[in-house]
Image 1 (cartoon, helix red, strand yellow):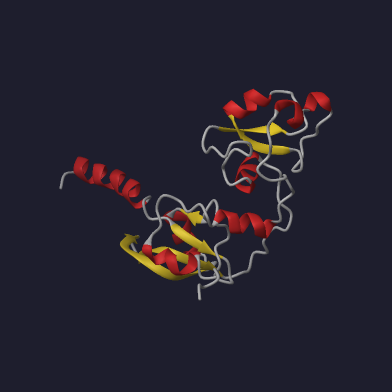
Image 2: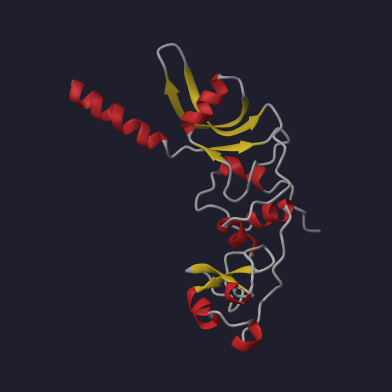
Length: 195
C-alpha cells in the first residue's frame, strides 16, 4: 500500500464509521429523548467509554484502534450518572410542531408547516402555547389576520401547554429513518403491552 493509498483509506474510514451512532440511555435505561432520538456519534461514545462516564450495553461489529487499544464501536451506551429530565418544556418551534404531531391544526395536512396565532397579534393575540398552533401555508394564508369565527375555520384541538412527559411520549411516534436492531429493546421497553 502506497502512502497515498494509506492516506485516502485513513480519510475515508472516519466517514464510514460516522454511520455507527450510539443510542444514549439514561441511568434508568430509558433514552434521554425520543424525538430527536438521543444519539451520539461513535467518536463521542468511545470518548465517554474511555473517560468511564458510560457503560457499553451493545456494540457494532466495527472496531477502532489506537496504538495501545482496540474497542468495538458501542451501539448502545448507558450513562453512569442519572440525568434528571426537564420538567418545563421550552416554547420552541420544534416543540410546538411536536405537540401538534407535525400536522396542520386546521386541515390536518403534514409538511410545509409554519405556525399561526389563533387570536391574531393584530387583535391582541400573544405568542404562547395557548395561542399558537402548527398550520400549513395554505391555511395560514387563508386565515390571515382573521379570527377563527370570521375565517370560518376550526381547530382540530385546543392548544395547551404540553407537559414534558407528554412530549416525550409524542416523540416516540416519530422514529428516525434508521433504527439499529440493537436499539429496539430500549426504545419501547416502557410501552404498555397489549393483552
